[in-house]
Every structure is written in C-alpha cells, then in structure tokens.
Amino acid sequence: MVEGELPVRKSPVVPGHQVVGVVEETGPGASRFRAGVRVGVPWLHQTCGVCAYCRSGRENLCERAVFTGWMVDGGYAEYVVAPEDFVYVLPEGLGDLHVAPLLCAGIIGFRTLRLSGVEPGGSLAIYGFGAAAHVTIQVARHWKIAVYACSREERHRQLALDLGAVWAGGSFDEPPVKLDAALIFAPAGELVVAALRALKRGGTVAIGGIHMSPIPPIDYNLLYHERVVRSVANNTRRDGEDFLRVAAEIPIRTEVSEFALQDANQALNTLKNDAIRGAAVLRV
Image 1: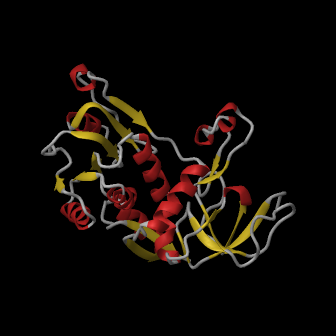
Image 2: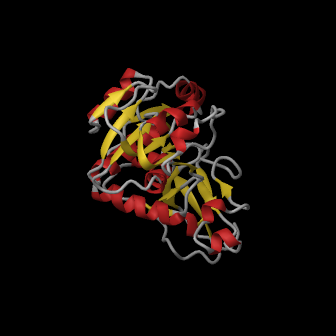
C-alpha cells in the first residue's frame, strides 16, 4: 500500500466498479477511517489533485483520473485497496445489496439531474429506465419534479410509473407536454433528437452515458430558442457526498437483481439484453 490507502474487506455484495465493504486496516498515513467501518469504493478511484480541473472543482475532468474496475482492480476479489480520500461513508439505513448501485449509477444519475438545470417543481423527461434512472427518479420526485419516462420496454415503463412518473411512453413517443429538461441514460444517439423535441425553450438535454451511438443530424429549429445538449462525464466527490446525503433523507430504495460471482457472465448478458429491472449486483 502507498500512503493514504486502506484495504477494504468487501461485503459479499459487490459490482465490479463499485464496492461495498468494511475497512480491514489502514495503510501508512491513512487516518480518516477506523477498522470495521462500512464504506463504499466508487467508480472515481482517484484524481491527480493538482491539474487545473482538480483545482477548480472539476476533478471529474482530470486527465489523469483512474477508475475502479477499469484502470485499477475492481470488485471481483475478497479485498480491494483504495485511497481514503475517495472512499465514502455509507447511509446506515440501506443494506449492502441496495446501497451498492448508489455508488456509480446513483451518483452519475444525480450529477446528470443537477446539470440538466431542472428546478424543484419543474418537469423532466428520462430516456432509458435502468439502474441510473430508477434511482434518479426518486431524487426528482423528492424535489417535486414531474417525471415523464420514455423506454422501449414495457417492464421499464411500469417501473417508472411504480416510482412516481406521471406518464410513461415508448422511446420515441412525445410526452403530452413540453418539459424543462431531459436526461438520457440509454446509449442511443437518436434519442437526442427525440429529447430535443420534448423540450420547452431554454431546456437542456443532459446525456449521462459514458458512450453513445452516433447522433443523427439535428435540425437547427430543435436547438433554436437556447436549447442545450450537454454531456455528463464521471462525477466529483462532492456529487457523491451530496447524493448520499439526499439518498438517506428520502430514503432511496433500489430495485436489485442479485447474481453470484460465478454467474458474472450471465449478469453481463442480462444487462446487454436490457433484461434487468433496476440494477444488477454480484455477490462474492
């Protein structure tokens, strides 16, 4: 271990790039947590801390950032080592199984919601209703935002209605009213055009995915009147801290499909085929 790191003995419940576990011991210079404390290791594993992005509160854009389960080892082992400054204290009211999805899908959904600019009491469309969306809608409803869900799958539309959406339609169905903002969590570029059609003047389409298929040509009339299309990249630690505080206040309840570690390939195929209601979590 290097200075400031601590090994976390993982809970039996972990996804690959977000980990729930208990601090086993602390490394040299690590003093933030004591052994036995339950913590979360998120997607954003560490940033450089010295670049212009980090120094201006935009560490999510750090060019030397590293990510859990991609650039450093993730959750497919009994232990994981993580820098203490990037580890979260977790809400006590949520069990390991249900808190794990908050550390990636939940945090990025929260940032996407905030960057959309929708105000409490406003209106919002959500395109793609999976892990991030089913958490984000709970924050939006907590803020008295009217949510309109657009998804190709009937079971996802029903989940949205169960969680408080005022309307649910197909991916390209136009909501019955013009909306203040739209969030896109499905990696389908053609949804950008559909989302723009749903917006009021001055509205924002915030894209929360890490990748997306090509976006078709956009008629300027859809952008005119100061509509905005923006991407959302990763998250900052402040996003995570703010979100986990709100999650505990609500409190957020996650829909989880659980898989054993040896069934990881099955879990990935199920995700690929859009057959998960809510989020998928592996049990180690």
